[in-house]
Image 1: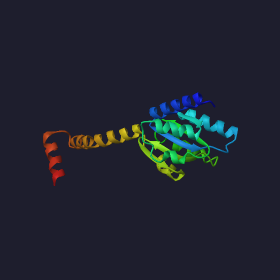
Image 2: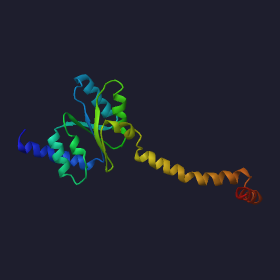
Image 3: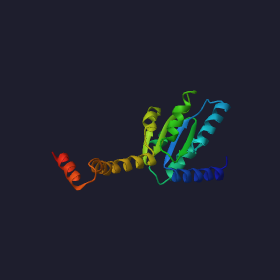
Image 4: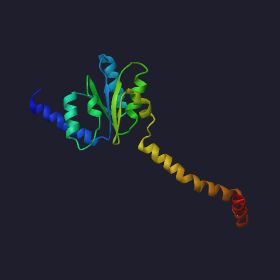
Length: 173
């Protein structure tokens, strides 16, 4: 690979690191062609982009990036694959599900919304991270519950003024 090719790959990797806020680094070494193909197919179905990268080029792209990847460059040894996803926990779920059939991929580390996770032991915690949509749903549910309580209390007494006053006085007592 020529120096120009390397600099082009570094530019592309730097752009991908800037565009994606959820980045997983995994080891898929030792997987045969069929299993690797299955993994790529599963990633495609889950809307996860998977690519195998050279450690030195990824490290240089991380250095060139405006983001702080913390200790993530320290795990760039051996075979390295990068997974990019819009959903923070999607690659973790995919890795966990895939490991029911195979002992790889192994999670080396992850960068999720500015937080750095190192090591395969973080996989279960990453699976439990809620997506943005799940968090919004939780917040909407919490905001709706007090209003629902008031409405159900008003309906339970027939909605008359005396019923409303009765309900409110019972709540205070």
